[in-house]
Structures are given as C-alpha cells and as structure tokens.
Amino acid sequence: MPVRKIVVALQNPGPQYETTRHNVGAMFLSEHLRHIGAPMPTAKKAFLADISQHDDVLYVFPTTFMNTSGDAVQKALHYYKIDPVEGLIVIHDDLDIPLGSHKVSRDKNHAGHNGVASISKRCNTKNYTRLRIGIDGRSEQEKRIPGRDYVLRNFHAAEHDILEALFSDLTPTLEELVRQ
Image (tube, rainbow, N blue to C red):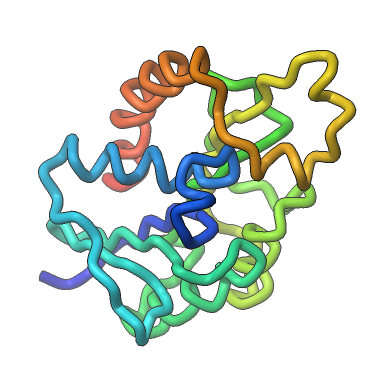
C-alpha cells in the first residue's frame, strides 16, 4: 500500500535515553503502535531509522541523535515522495508545556528544540504538523537545571501515571491528524 503520511517520533538512540523526557515522543508512538496493532518498528539503515508501516502511514523512529533527526526524516520523505507540508507529522517533547498536556501546531518556531530545527533545515520548510508533548514537571529545585540537561533525565516514578493518561488521550489526537 502506498504511503500517504509519515509520522516521526523524535528520540535519542540507545537504552540510556529510552525513558528520558527527550524521548517522550518515541515512548508515546511505541504505545500508539501497540494500541492500533501495528507491527513494531524494524531497522531500515537506508533511512537512518527504525520504521513500521500500518495501512498508508509510515511510522519513523530516527536512529540518529536528536540534533540530526532531519537526516532520517528527509530520507523517508524523499523515498516516498511525501510533501512535508501535507504529509509529515512530528511528535516531540516540549519543555514549555506542562507535563500531562500537549499541543498540536504548525508554527514556524522550533523554540530551541534542536531535533525540530534539524528537520526544518533538512526538509527546507518549517510548515509541517507537530504534536508537542509537555514534559515540564520541574520542582523548584529542578528549575535551576539547564533545559538541555533536564530533558535527558528520566521521568520520576510518580509521573508515569500522568504519562499513561496522557498517552491514552493522545491516541485519538494522532489518529485524527493521520486522517487529515
């Protein structure tokens, strides 16, 4: 079946990053694939990513580091001849949104997210759909930690229930974005 949409979950590769705040996009998309009965992703070295296809949607988990995510996204878009304005959905963490919340946007500002900046640069557009997952659950003490360090921290045990509820809420949101 031809691919109509490409959904990308930003992440850093490797087990040490698997459950960090920066990888919340990949955490959600993995759960979403289980929910819809899609195959688990497999390595596609030519795309620099792990991929899964379900119906006419390609799900992409870049195996590059966050700052070079655009390389993997550009390869998939080019191969499947998908216009990012119409067919790209990027799921990523957002430190400016409270934990347990999300926003869908097509704004042109990457707000300091290097993965998003990499995609915009490699795809030569800032106009694509973004599903931004809030990760800001910082305590007063944690607010002193630089954002670039905070995003590489694991979620606290108490935050996992919040994520579980959020992921449940995000599933229909992603399904609607894919249908558009």
